Image (tube, rainbow, N blue to C red; front, top):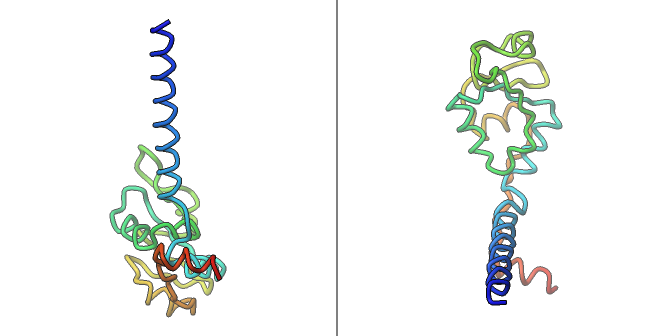
Length: 142
């Protein structure tokens, strides 16, 4: 009987840890990114970035956008575990990473600042303000 109780307690503990972990992970990935509107605008205007998984400058661009990166049209050019480039990137004539392509057919290579991307696309750069927990709590009360 004691073994059965121990097993139940351990199982409940494992479930509780799993639930807490899942909630913590979900909470850290929840909510809008600071540059969601800007990233969406870039995509709506036909902007895309060609890059490679091993490219440190591409990684920097992704990190610049943070969670808002999910709204950027990104084309992976590297072939996993192989040398060379995907057919899509070859056909597009991409020769360096990152390469930003704009709707007018022009390109910019290398890391681009938000200001440079905004100027080229006319997408307004208005980051969302990070609401404090106090502000978020009082907004729902009004």
